[in-house]
Structures are given as structure tokens and as C-alpha cells.
Image 1 (tube, rainbow, N blue to C red):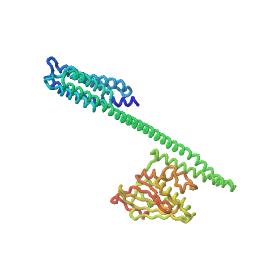
Image 2 (tube, helix red, strand yellow):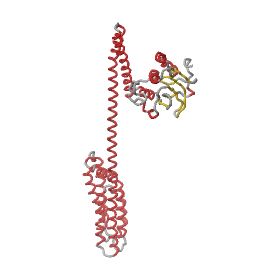
Image 3 (cartoon, one colour):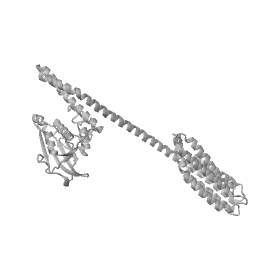
Image 4 (cartoon, one colour):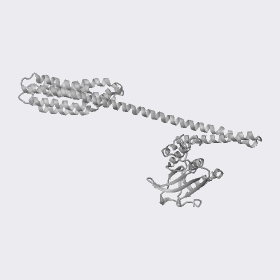
Length: 450
């Protein structure tokens, strides 16, 4: 962690180098222009300016090398040493103004020089305080020579300037340390958050790969198991037709029934795996929804007649042709009717309503299936659509593994629609909503629908 924080501090300083060098050059040129007439005879600030420009050029060169170093992040201490050395050189260059190029007393520019040094110190707070060692080295190398230079001069003004510079240096060192500590804590938090984000991303990718592998495994196993199950059912049915022994025939019928249930489960697993891996193909074409519902409902005629259950279908008069995959949506309708039939009481009623509605996306086709069974608790209206989840009122003794509604949601979502369970005091109500063509484009229902 310390290495990462040091790298972040060096990175901030290196990014600030262009602006620091630009400010240094402009200030140095102004200093040469205004202070040259005030210097004692024989002193020339052009030598100082050349030294300052040379140090600035070295700082730019080091910054260029740092940017081109592919392993800079792995060795921050090397670049930190360069930063400290250049900070010391820059500070000594500024401090030499007072140590070597002190203005004459008659010029009155000595307080101006002290103010210039304090101004440069204040500017460095913004650019270098993140890396406290470089900040402290710069201040000490700049202000300590100035302190000694003013301290050895006679008079009250130099003494006052010495005290002022010393207090200013102490203030900047203490305040800078507090700011640098806060900055280091902030950098530590940023690094920890970045590491957590990376770990979370790795975990997400790992989970996605595991989920994809699981779906692929389910798809492969479901596909491979369907062939032997068909053989089991075929031989069981053959035994039922040829056996003259009632007891043996009963055993074979149970085998056939159990194999059929297992085959249906394998089919659900295969469908779920195909949907999750986006390998299920859809052929969405305009179809008559009423004719589709009536055809699927007719498949349940023997079962509902045996228990006295009624299936009532009510449709709006202006139903258009709805874009859908007939085979897949039939699977959804079949699942909804089968669930309602499974939980409906004898002599009960299953109501299927088809209509049109408006929502935020425009006109939608609605298919609502309601029964008179045990219903769905309000706190489970959403969870019943999750994989391998059943309602608490139906999970015992009802059979199934909780895949039907999950598959329905995937199929409906592939159509751009939604499916939901509605709160109801008696029985379950499930509603499918699919995008419907705008009213101007709607085609009249077919003769069968009418």
C-alpha cells in the first residue's frame, strides 16, 4: 500500500510539472527584469536565470522519461528520489536570490524580495503539498538561505523580515504536513476503492463464466438425456400393449408416466439453458392471439372435463394481429393454463382475458389468466418468476421444480414484453403484456378470432 501511495504522489507531481515550470520561467523573467537595476555593482541576474532555466529543463526531461517508463508504477522510489533532488535544486536556485543577489538597502527592494519568496512558497503549496517530502525540501532549501541572508544584515527591517520568513516557513511546514496527511488518506481510500472495484469486476466475470458453463452443462446434459428417456418411454409403452399380466402392465404404465415427467423436466432445463445462452431462435410474425389461445386451451379438454373445470375465454373486439413467435408463446400460454389447472379446485373456473391497453411505451396486448386456486402471497408476486422458486402455498405436494414461470419470463422478455403476477384475494392472476402495433397499423382480427 505504501508503494502505491508513493506512486500516486509522484504521479500527481509529475502531472503538475508543466504548469510549475511555466510559472517558474515567467516569475524568473519578471524577477530579472525588475531586480537587475537594484543589485550591487558587479552582480548579474542573467547567470541566475540561466541556472533556473537549466533546472526547469531537467525537470521537463525527467517528466518525459517518467512518462515513457513502462515500469514507472512498479518503482516509484526511483522517481521519488529524482523529484526530491529537483525540488532541492529549484529551492536552492530561488534561495540564492537572497544569499547571492540581495538588493541594495537604498533600493528598498529587500521587503519586495522577501514577499517574492513567500509568494513562490505559497504557490508551491498547491502543486507539491501532496508529496510532503518534496514540498518540505523545496521550502527549506529556498527559505533557510534567505533567513540567514536577512539575519546577518544590520537594521530593524532585515530583522523583521527574518522573523517574518521564519514564521512563514514554520506555518507552511505545519500546515503542509496536515494537508499532506489528509491527501495521503484520500489516496489510500482511492486505491482501496480501486482494488475493491477490480476484485468485484473479477468476481463478476468469474460468476458470468461459471453461469455460462452451468448453462452449457445443463443444455448438453438435457439434450443427451432426452434420447435414452425416449427409449425408456417407447419400451415401456410397448410392454403395456403386449403384456397380458395386469400387475406387470401397471408397473410399465408407472414407468411410462414417470419417464414422461422426467422428459418434461429435461425439456424445461434445455429451454432454460438455451434462453440463458441466447441460443433459442425466435420467429416473430404477426399472428392472431385469440386463435392461439383457443388452440392451446383445446389441448386441456380431456383433463378439464375429467375434473369439471371450465376454461372461459373473453377477448376484446378490436384485437389486432400481434407480432409473436407462435410456438414459444404457445409454450407460455400452455404453462399458465397448466398451473391454473393444477391448483384450481374441482368444478372451478379458469378465466382467460385478451385485450389492449396503453402504457409508457405505447399500445400493448394483454393476456390475463386467473384461477380460483390458493393464489400467490403478495410478498412472493415477484419471486415466483425466479429459477427453482415456487410459491410457499404451492411448493409442497404440487410437483415441479419452479422452472415454468422462469422460462415464461425469458420467452416474454425475448418478445420485448413483460409478465407479472397481480395481487388477488382469491386465486392467482398472471398477466402477459406484449407490444402491439399502433392503432393506425392494426389489422382487423381474423374470422376465427371474431
